[in-house]
Image (cartoon, rainbow, N blue to C red):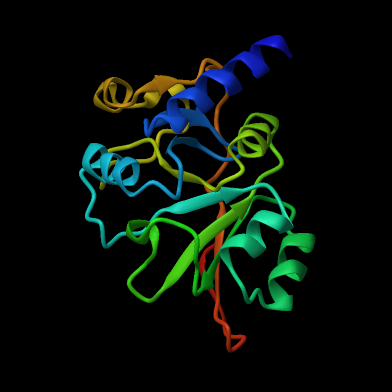
Length: 189
């Protein structure tokens, strides 16, 4: 437990200063930063060699944070999250209080609520959403374990969280797009 708290502290200090981290999520290893910091987000796009038009997911730890970013959350969003047995990412309309370069061209944002202790507690400490994008160069396969992460990615971040290095990831999250006019579209099962 001590190690968990130490890693949360270390990651938080880097994020607070505008840095980017490599960290374990409830799905795959992710590259992350403060979702309200456009400069930090730009560093991630550069590291991944990814076009800024390809949006990324943000992690949140509860209803309060969700309502801080989305004024209107369709009721079906809560039903989907309650019924989901595996990590589920929702794409919702009209985000606010996040950096503009994390918002998709159609004015939507992908969000996943996390329960995994490291991410959950880091979010509690940050009091802001955390960017989460797979730890790979754009177009390359998503690494399923820490040992599969490209050394360029490891060298390119400001901090590598020292937890769960031997864990093999599950599948990436399901992605469902929900519009304010109640349309539902499954992007990834």
